[in-house]
Image (tube, rainbow, N blue to C red; front, side, top):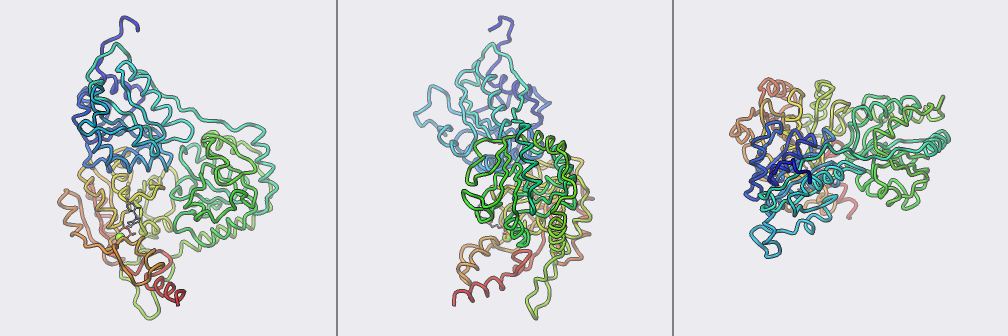
Length: 564
Ligand SMILES: Cc1ncc(C[n+]2csc(CCOP(=O)(O)OP(=O)(O)O)c2C)c(N)n1
Ligand SMILES: [Mg+2]
């Protein structure tokens, strides 16, 4: 160690390293296990410390921040109880390939393995949930291990890294200096692979591009759009990754999420070539592994992913390329376009199917009057109203089918949703997005079930706050849908007795409105924008409207008919 280094406490070194890695915002629920870090943050006003109300919400905020900015979302939580609460957001960062650095307080080193107060072995606990877990047992190693944490979180396939901080290590001092910033390491596509890719695509008759995964930057999305336009390649996106391709591009075909259009699913099955860029081709995107054969996909599969381990996993590609998204997108944009492609009509028909799907389905069963609140019309209005840079966040639940099918995402506009399917994501994600971009319109979509999981984080919102659209159908709708399919008429554990949501929102100081009729939506939305604080608009749904394509009673009738 150089003699002129300052003696710093572990806590000061942690915060010095966060600054050195360019951290501007961190999400926390306080704990006595990491007082030294909180105290060092007192002297670091350049880091905006967001004080949250439950670690699940805080972890979702950090995840959403990471997803939105591409920089690691930083989360600070306390030992066992805090770490347990935070697990849902860490699992989401893992499944969603989101860079995140989680700092967890830990018992003092001399008490480890006594099952001391709130002690947990974080290496064991987080082993399957995080990309890497470490514990810093020597104060002088804080710079080294935090640097590694940021490197691992951002390199290859991004993900969450958990760093346990024993409280006595944070108190101890060492003559050490913070180091940073991290430099994310990403692979580049090779020249020969690119030539082979172009040859395979040019030979296709019915190609489909599938884009997805994490690691997309605005310039990478722009490069991707250039590539798709230049060769008129039709492209869909994976579950909750609708913001990678501007949905208004004639090459965009829709998403392979939980409510994927049957016409799109059929088309991907008919395709003779699938060019997957960034997507893992996971269970939801592959429509329960039915889109492609396993392991032989039964068509020309070109798979490009940031992580080598994902290539050849489940599906065996003809060509596998390990690359970061900015690197592959730039290389694809520079390829010679394929002139007069044979698939022009195939692309046009696919786009026509997508555009037809933007027309709301007729959901009213014969002889019944239509629902007073027509969500198809509400979404169509929002599609026109939202600015290009709007940030849309979403919880998990059937309500998410409405924005996913009817809104049109576009960069710099964003879609932040949990591909992990975690309920409770929508509200915290919207709060984090608004903190990161106070000047942009942020709209969070959530069900009545999901709202009561993390809705208390509205208390964490600062300034103008996001607009939360709360879809109240008085049930765990997704599960009720599955119930009607498997056990028609036997409703169990899925009905909800709800509080007065507008009153609850007002108690938090938020603007609140209730919408029961289509024509009430636009004025409520405009009033929410004008309120310049967090806002909750409760949409009173007809429970019949279970998806964008079918009603609850139609589901039940179909299930009963197939049973008899
Ligand atoms: C944390 C968590 N718990 C449970 C589930 C299982 N689950 C998936 S969707 C859903 C219901 C969502 O209900 P709600 O938020 O009201 O939305 P709706 O489906 O009614 O539109 C449940 C319970 C989950 N995905 N995540
Ligand atoms: Mg519901």
